[in-house]
Image (tube, rainbow, N blue to C red; front, side, top):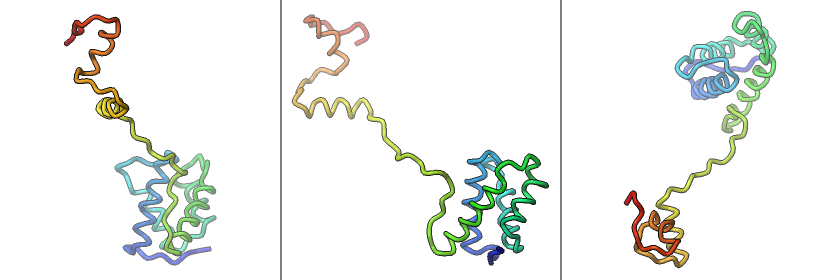
Length: 138
């Protein structure tokens, strides 16, 4: 089924971005080359169906043809989502990003637990044996 899309519209721009991201994910493009994404969006603008886009990608663009039907299915799902005002699902669900605590965060957390000391933490390991000398690298 062909979908109505016009060049230069917000829908076409959003699709171009989503398609480019997906192409990078599946290894069919490079970060600085958007020509394949633009070509795929133009196929939509020209009224190509899901099967026609999959076939053209498999025969003319990606000779191995692996994953083209799945990509075309994904593409038309993105069109439906965007036409209904929803966000794109360009990639698989990404795990929530976690920050790595810095040394400063560790020092502050340790001090907030009641370990009130004025000496830097680098001295801790050397003073653990009871000596009062600063480490050699201080």
